[in-house]
Image (cartoon, rainbow, N blue to C red; front, side, top):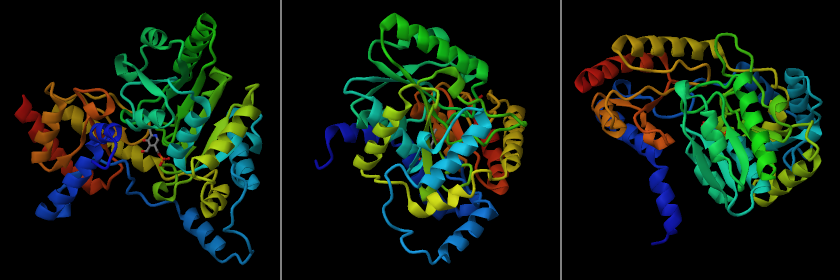
Length: 393
Ligand SMILES: Cc1ncc(COP(=O)(O)O)c(C=O)c1O
């Protein structure tokens, strides 16, 4: 066996989305793409905003030499300054370029953050249902995830949070709007998480970081403003990307931002910069750094996602599904009408609707719908959702 035992186990555990992806290809070959409703992937069908092509064209024509060379491992100073200026205007805090590190997406940022903060055996507290990659990212750096079960509406169970934080906890990882639920943590929720962290820090004599994985932070509905984490714990870091808000997931561009109010911010930035280099990322892609420098105020058309959310939520509720209304992102996480979510996902598949079982997100009994697809795909899926629900009744 060429692949290590641990990785073989992880591959099995993390294989749901890949399996659905492969299933989708086979079904599309058999029935024709227009007759398969693939709602299994968080890969937006939406194109980047027009400003992206304009900026890319301008940069491609720029004759300045050296634009494709290595740069400081934290990224171009101008890009870091632009990111910081945007964060300062959103939060009112004193962000400068010295608090931002350009990364290969939020996934790259999270790996750099965990590498910097975790010693072997340290724990990362995550809230179920969670993005399964967290388990693998923590393991990459000798860490282990500990899970907090959800309370009503997929909000945190605060008592369980305090029970889960222990002497080896180094990171409490939040993600809002979340994948797979689309649930947004309000400032009130974040404040209670910050309070719980500080209580446990003084009880256990440890230092805990509040880390926010927030690639969906700009895909917020109903005119909501994004509740940033920084006011709720001084030891805090946001990891984000432009994969979703500029629809650029293949371009691998994001950043990590350290709270300027944290007394260890400088030391942590040095650690992040070192780890960006030594994990082999070296630096975030040069061209994309220069593009996103100009696009900090630009976002995809969020109203299109909101319209899809409204359509799908109303349609599922009409059929009889129980579902928490998402406040952002482009996912929904309905309750499976039968306990066995894997079996129900199989039933949906027999109606050519592809979704991912909740088991893949540490929360069985549910399934995830990704609705970053065309209106035709979404509308076409409703009949399958209805038939599968009726057959489960
Ligand atoms: C919750 C969450 N975190 C992180 C990522 C990784 O995104 P990126 O493309 O920025 O690495 C994703 C991607 O789907 C995600 O859903």
